[in-house]
Length: 89
Image (tube, rainbow, N blue to C red; front, side, top):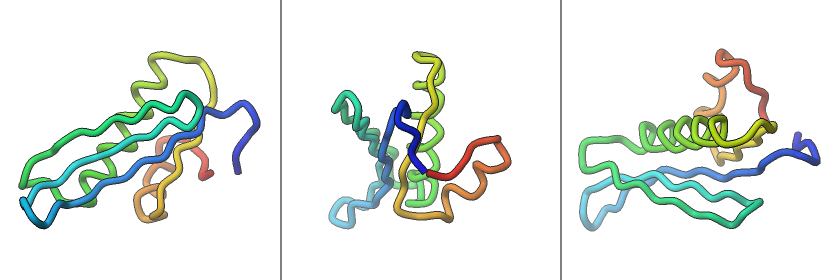
């Protein structure tokens, strides 16, 4: 559920087969900013997904005092966040 004043963000982690490396990506729907973080060849796609979610939540928490809706294509990555006190979008 997205609340009208939410900062809406999309995150993704992926592996680049041709170079054997992983990375994390973040897209902020509100301001159109996109960030990409290379994570090297030892991080898994799961780790890249979690890194993107946690990094973006921390950065936004430090910058603004507003609710944040982080969208991910995998509930597997969002379920542990319930323990951190967040809600699913």
